[in-house]
Image (cartoon, rainbow, N blue to C red; front, side):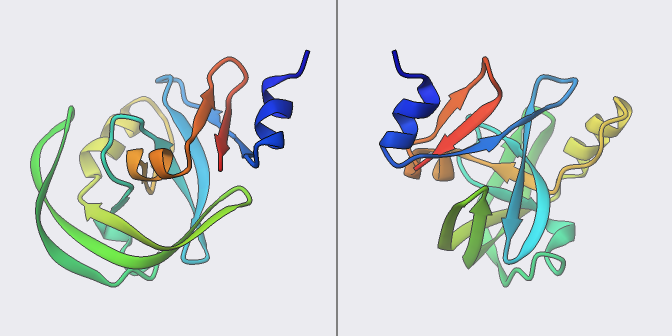
Length: 145
């Protein structure tokens, strides 16, 4: 009997270790435009997002967006969007990836209250769907194709 890893590897997937936070959220180390960051893996988030205060750090060319961001922790927030970015998660790589920027202070404030290190952004369903992602919750692995 083949393991999940063997099966997915034979189908062209790469795997990335997920870090579990005390909140049961997953964090995945991600490289955006050559800069490494900590991103929450959020299957419920429509888009991959970055904290707007990190625009310069991640070399993002942000433009105002008409869309609003919302989450369980805040009301609607203004957003910006940055197109044509390089995104790398483990050995999976994508160029010309768009990211949404918004104020993630409420997210990081909630993490700080629990003594958890800030996150730089969120990996959302746009990446997860396009890579046919598989989350192995039992073993804390993310598989991307």
